Length: 194
Image (cartoon, rainbow, N blue to C red; front, side):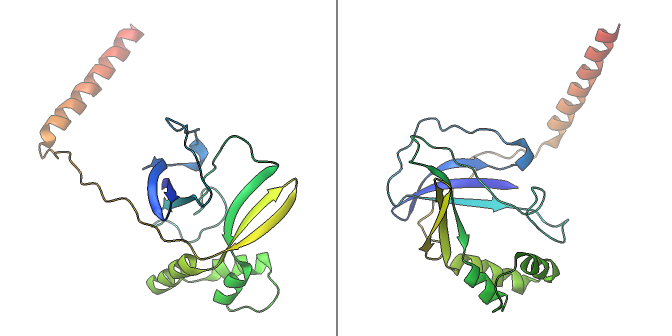
């Protein structure tokens, strides 16, 4: 999994708050920013996770499944705010799975597990997530409140950075270094044993 979170201000990416090429939920660490940032009304966070699911047949809510969460700590504390997240509306989910019955979590989960994924259905779901109405969910003093949001906002992203590193085509040097390191490691272990 790779994971990043960007700060979006005035519909433009301002900076990465976190950017990890390799991320594992069970090996988390606190990533403090080099310098504090000021957040303003209207600022947004954009978080993206990229998975390699070639060895999986289903997802889920467990950490080893396709779950993407990013916890953000801030100060000073806002009055009694204990949680804040966004989610797609239940109605938008019922619309895409073609259900008019009252929402049933277990029935929806079974529906997802029975879904046969194809390139076409993957595109359909990505479009759904990009366009579905969302809710901002937050809790103050133990009371949950929601506010409607539009679809995932669009923003001007960073310009791609071209790789400046020269790629060596001489694998022989890497082989020699690897063998020398192995030899030295064995030599040091033998000295420590004797």
